[in-house]
Image (cartoon, rainbow, N blue to C red; front, top):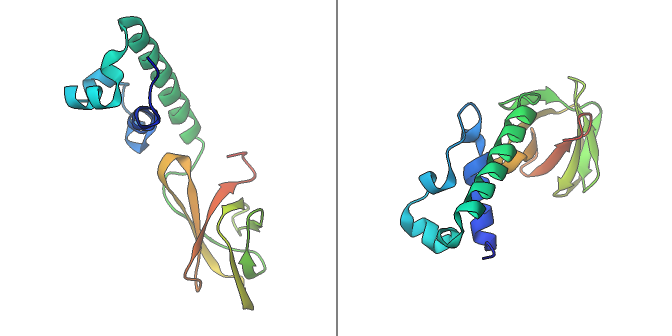
Length: 149
């Protein structure tokens, strides 16, 4: 039986979400109701397939927890070095704290530059990060450049 995209997304969210950090892995069949198992098709897996799925999910959770140990948990508040007129995919911002963040989604342009504006980088779902610059109403999805994340 092939797992559906919905089942894969649900499983990944349950196994690797922010709540996964700091707790032992719980088998997928214990996390979902029988209706949820049926709706996702996971009730059709053999015992061996279910054991493999649980092993893979536990490995993924362990890797996510290990990776998150090297990243800050909460928002990062700093200021951007230099002026900001906007951004597009690929733009790199360097913060006063030394961190560098590359825009991976979103764009913004202004004719008036902001000099050394305050910025906040907040964690989002599934290891994503979002940059907000004081004085600008839109944000950008970013990835940390100096750590490869």
